[in-house]
Amino acid sequence: MITPNGKGMFQTFNDGICTIHCIDDDGNAGDVVAKVRFQKRTIGVTRFYEAMTAKVQLDKLIRIPLQPWLTTEYFIVIGAEVYEIKQAQEIMDTMPKASDVSLKLTRQRRVSDAAV
View 1 (tube, rainbow, N blue to C red):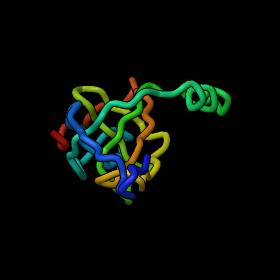
View 2 (spheres, helix red, strand yellow):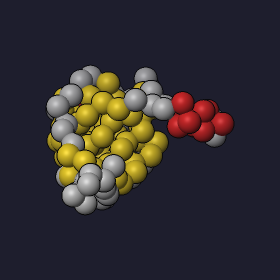
View 3 (cartoon, rainbow, N blue to C red):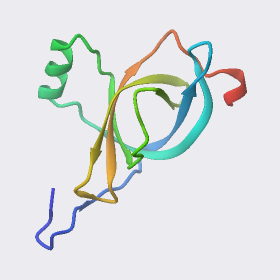
């Protein structure tokens, strides 16, 4: 959303800290690439049904400060839960710029011992 002064809407990331991990050789969350604060977002009805139509399950949507390199080739860990990134969408009209990250909980994956 753009405010009347032409600046983007100011974002806060006060809901917690997540870590972004490389995927190791065993398919688990390996080395930590970044540690960032996040804001919980609501998965809207449209996004939810579009994902279901594409046979993709979404469990969580978070907003983080912009990470232009972030792709589906990383895992995000929040607490002890490992999530696959299903989509990372750049949000350019906020201050600071941000990424909305759609996540799917992966019950089969864990954080590798070396990534603690």
